[in-house]
Amino acid sequence: MNVSIENLAPCRKLLRIEIDAEAVTAAFDAMVNEFRKEANLPGFRPGKAPRDMVAKRYEKEIADEVRRKLLSENYRKAVEEQKLDVLGVPDIEEIQFGRGQAMLFAATVETAPEIQLPEYKGLPAKREIRSVTDEDVARALDVLREQRATFETAARAAATGDIVVVNYTGTCEGKPIGEIAPVAKSLGEAKAFWIGIEARSFLPGFAEQLIGTQAGDRRTVTIDFPADFRTTELAGKRGEFAVEVVEVKERVLPPLDEALAKALGADSLDKLREGVRKDLENELKYKLDRQVRTQIIRELLSRVQFELPESAVATETRNVVYDIVNENARRGVGREMIERDKEAIYAAAANSAKERVKIAFLVQKIAEQEDIKVSNEEIARRATTLAAMYQIPPDKFVKDLQKRNGLVEIYDQLAHEKVMEFLQQHAQIEEVPSSQMPMGLATANPS
Image (cartoon, rainbow, N blue to C red; front, top):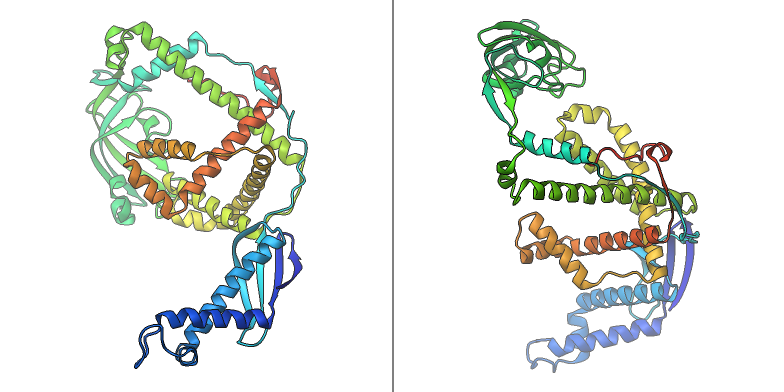
């Protein structure tokens, strides 16, 4: 076998592979013998038909099998001999093939980038000086109380923080909203509808106009639908709502006492405070570790440049676009808005994808350099944890993962985590106050 390599582009190569005629003929002869063992021709017992008759009867099938076998074996051998780290599936072009002549084929492959690792031990990072305070614990406990709040009828005017129960009908440009936008009938009319008197409740500017109303009041509420409103028939238009206030309800928080602690699964109020503090400390540690690792990644990326495989970037760009579109859909952004901004979405996705791919190759290279590996037991534990999270039987979850190559994804995730832990352990970390943290990295309150 003779192999020549041509560099088409960074991370893209063309292999020209030639297999001499003698090897091709030998492969044909061996394949005829294989077919002869199973051949069932009239007048002959299985395996006893003459070779020439078998070769003629199964000429096409034999040639197909020889072609497949020679392509597969010699491509693999060429990749091994040339020490290529091939990504994905090769693009094979057959140039010449036939019994008694040399076989020629070309394989276009994409390869992992050649990376000269920079010094990755001792990368600088700043860690914010933060601790969980009594005020943090108190705020977290208030959040728990909010989650168990009740709403009681209030014989007074509505104020910020209250709930106003209303009946309403809406029009836009003199027509019922339900006629203008049939998909948004609930915006056109509702009975006993609860609206929180707080920012961003229901429609922009609606709730604020109900401050000061009492049960029995009637009020006309006028709002301007945003230009990017999810219901495009209403976007940029003015709506008018006839509102009847049925009831004003005030939020009542349960007292912070032993009964609340037991309702939340704690043995006592002191134990509840201890548990909340421990949770906040774990959350804060996670945030501080994440801010350190973000800086480590930024520093590592700044120290090395290399070309990225086009297919890897294209695949990751599609993944990022998919995530962005799904997130926009969850936020209520209409398909028309997404279509309008598709170029900006794609540009942002492409930049993000390049960084992700670059990080992935760097992490893989460092894992090889430091012999960082993931065991089957670690993969199994992570799969079990994920199965419990999604409430799927572990066996079924693992089978689903195997079908879509998900176990490889878990391996990559665990390897990434291990490499990041290694880099953090070997980083030069300086503890500083929030004011000295890099832009956008200071933490918020842990609660």
